[in-house]
Length: 114
Image (cartoon, rainbow, N blue to C red; front, side):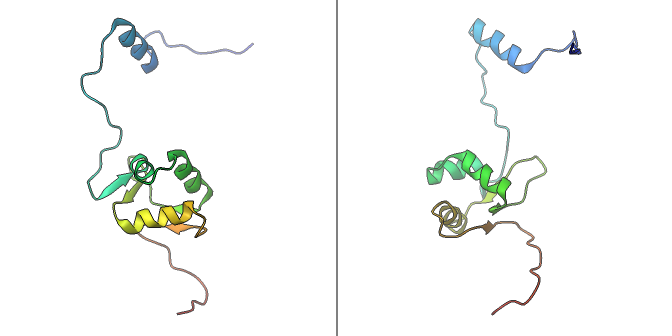
């Protein structure tokens, strides 16, 4: 037998949403989870701009093909520049195998050809 602990004084957000929708009450302001400056793009904005699935970006981040800093809020924000969009598109087109968009990139070890 599995024991599930319940809290009688808590209501799940989905329950509140269903009650609102059932009563025809709409949220007056659109909520946005991530607030960021115009010089950065969210993963959704990058995906919409390039016409690619946002989940593809997250898979590339998880696999290590797309290295990017995670913000303190938990968001992955991309620099809003043509270079960034070109790099992500190159990764999508398999022109490059990985890209690194981190602000502080670790020092590369070993011999470097220049």
